[in-house]
Length: 168
Image (cartoon, rainbow, N blue to C red; front, side):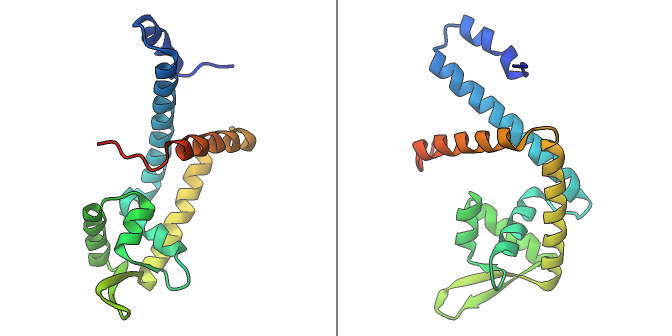
């Protein structure tokens, strides 16, 4: 097995007296952070040409996948993207100003609103999704699909075991 950057940290952790379970958790944390950074950097580089932030892309992508109307409630967006309601609101304001989304009243609930992609927003979302897919494939180039599948399944198992824990 070939070592990575995180393996270089393990001897120092071990020498400092950390337990093996803590070291394993730190290795997992460092590696998932590194992977997330690689994916986000690659996607952000592709999105720069569209003038989109990663958060804006995330919302446009979620709305593009929302069938059939390409619409969701802001609370659904926030929950599905692990964003705060305030953060979601700020991004939606920018996307509305850009003409990519529009807000519409919910006829079934006067207190609620829908966020819907505009035709221009759908075009931008589709382009961004294509570019993000390209970036993700480039990051994972050379990694066998079976390895990626095993890692994804192992991470799911960990997240299911953790449940809906929130750290303060």
